[in-house]
Image 1 (cartoon, helix red, strand yellow):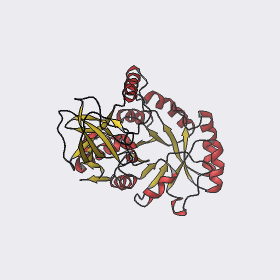
Image 2: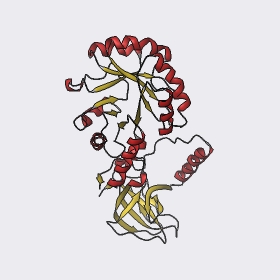
Image 3: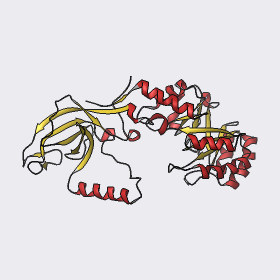
Image 4: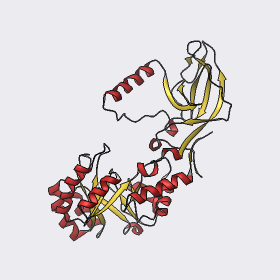
Length: 347
């Protein structure tokens, strides 16, 4: 009874090598659920890529990767005074992100000589210092900690080169020799390196590294039970009635539910007309008790019969569709960063 992620190992590894070759100075990012693949696996694969630094999202993720990756560990979430002290063996390996001048003195007092990158605010408006704060903080930081460069976290909208070039002027003003940067294409990185040959560019890459070749990844779920349904019958936790005659012939009980992330949707990123129309259409379907599921049979998406359960889901099989056998696998289309798999197999 499982929701399983299958990885075509040779194809996936070839993609990882390709990304690493196109991004000199690559810093793999392993955070959250490890992009569905698991933090431990990504840490081991980062060592295989022969990179010297692995980036994690938070301090809480350090224990899962520290024993599996021998190099430096960059924490992307900025350091704050409430962060617990590091284990002594990690002092020389962890690179902290400092995004507020006020935090520098506290960190330096608690961990003299700590390794840090200073974060410059970008159009993301999430963390970071203004240009003046960066210029004022950099010389003070060099006297108290080990400054390893400036961090720049750009948005995911693309065409980030103009903003990156503007911010590089601030990097030069801070006398930094290394920039740790996110969300730039290989072509943009090439332009940046050409414009600033004396500065080392370290691209931080997560999604396009681990999930960049979706054809190498597939997800399946098991059919746990198959039940014929007739008009007027009730089913499920909420005792819904079967739909109108001719629309559905069977209920399928399949593995995967809310505990795996099935049916739990993040807020839509579509701000345009098409995105708003999609949200409105989805809301209309939900109001009628009909919602397309991520499960696919013979290339056809199936609908939920009711909201997913914790570890299983009930689906409506359209009349005329092939009736699958118990134990058969269905394809599942999921968002990897929001899904927990029962097993991950890499060939």
